[in-house]
Amino acid sequence: MPKGSESGLVRLPAFGCRSYHVGRCLYEEQLNPGLNTAWRCGVQARWEAVYDDFLTRAENFSLDETELGRLWRLRFERLAEEPVNCPDFEPALVDTLPECRHLFVDICLLRLPVCTGHCVNYRLHTKA
Ligand code: SF4
Ligand code: SF4
Image 1: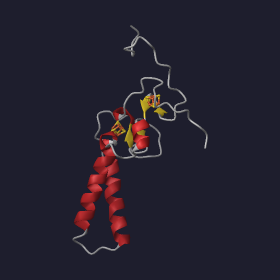
Image 2 (image 1 turned 135 degrees about the vertical axis):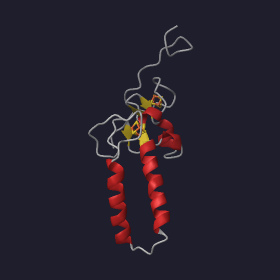
Image 3 (image 1 turned 120 degrees about the vertical axis):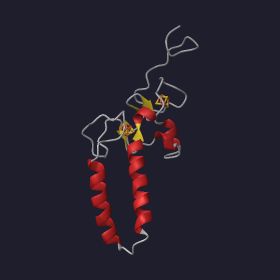
Image 4 (image 1 turned 180 degrees about the vertical axis):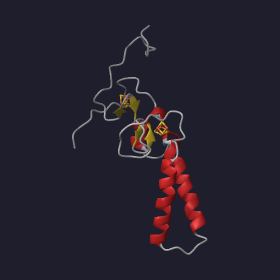
């Protein structure tokens, strides 16, 4: 029996599907953006936790927004200079931090389901 098919049928490739991205399926994420937190980039999630902690601590001081922003920029610069704490990190030239080839907006592509071929949710990508 051909690989990837229990019925003996081989699925067509999903190229052109609007949920297809580098071999992964974004369908569920597109339906409920942000709902599955397990798909988030772990490095970005950690940075957010650090930011939340920073805000909590900052509440104890009466800082105005300008000072708060300045302090966070300094804190984040140090954070971003640290080695990326992710075993799957692969450096790439992208606009978003961390500069990882597996990052898609705030999603880690490695955590998304693999597209196994043309399925019932296949929808042709249309130009805007
Ligand atoms: S064909 Fe199906 S599994 Fe593949 S990306 Fe599209 S919706 Fe996802
Ligand atoms: S592989 Fe890249 S995108 Fe995925 S969690 Fe690690 S740093 Fe984030």
